[in-house]
Image (cartoon, rainbow, N blue to C red; front, side, top):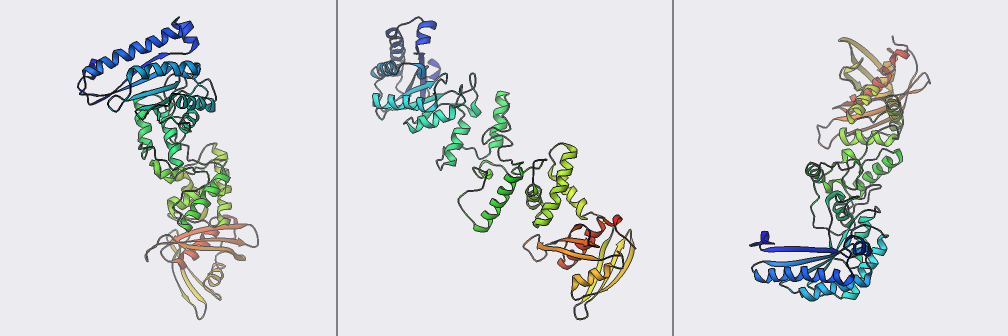
Length: 444
């Protein structure tokens, strides 16, 4: 204890095993001898503390293996320590009741804690603490139920490190409190930093699916999960709700320093919502349902052939390739004019730096454009789907158009275009839907 001389505050922890197996097999001591050992240690510590009143001393006593000890004997030895220490404001006491080896269900451990509190009737200067382990995999549950039973202090480790299967995981325990509206007064707002620091210090990895901290805990691969999450975020946006209540996400990932990018990742399990969510989050594209369904088929084909998850960059590359959003498309609309009164469109296209001029007539811009395109594509062109939206809120924001076109009443081909002018985007999207598959068409 000489190492503590001069400090302002100190907790001195003393413990001895009290369970029958330890009394009989390890120490060959009677109950009386075990109590005498605890009294002797407490007496020695108190004498030292009284000689150094400049320090605010707290004694912590643990009847180690409490969870396997007869409750009557646990009460007896704790009372003996309390009688010697005489806890008060200057010399508080922590009675720490460990589940040194987890041998019971959490409710039994909580019942033991409750019995100790009701029997000992500790004063305000005595804190009842618990020290759960995780041998049965229920360390967190035991700690939570022990708190409900009256314990006011929990000992544990970050990410459940410790002997055997580990001590109670303080990260999970704290975040469980947080999600129930009780702030644990521990700062996990940058969880990835906590993880990296713990891994560096302990050389023990944090599992990808570790509660709250693993890299996959907010990630949905399943199509139905992705669809629910996507709709939950949209509902939240439309209703401006302050209460976090998004399907499959027990808390806002941003609360622990995570971005929404990792919430949905795409592999062969994913449905139409996964890839469309990623395109919306990263590129502002709000795909209409028909395009979500079509693109999901291409995603499925890609992931099946490669046998692995598809990255955000690969999704964007596949989308651009599939729907004509290439840097240098086969055919691009250079410029056009449209006379609404006569329904006449004049347009110039570029094909490999060669200019093509088109002239068309119709009741509106789209019908006139379809008429003009019949000069290039020998057949009947029908626009079955059309949607558009802005990619921003300012006046100079770009616009995106989505179309589904049918050629000679065959299958539907889809195209997408992004332009500063929404009308040009619509015309280019129709063009893209055709040139995406133009080797199959009759191109003049």
